[in-house]
Length: 27
Image (cartoon, rainbow, N blue to C red):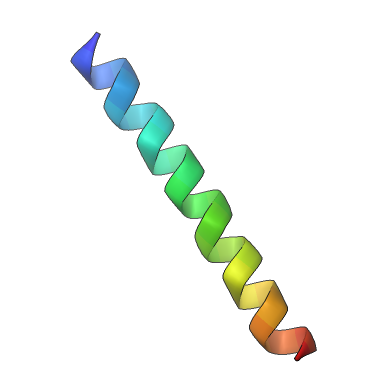
């Protein structure tokens, strides 16, 4: 259970980072 939650958080975090990086490049 705990490992699954950590995995989901990592995927969400990675998605947010990629989204922020793409915004910085376009800005």
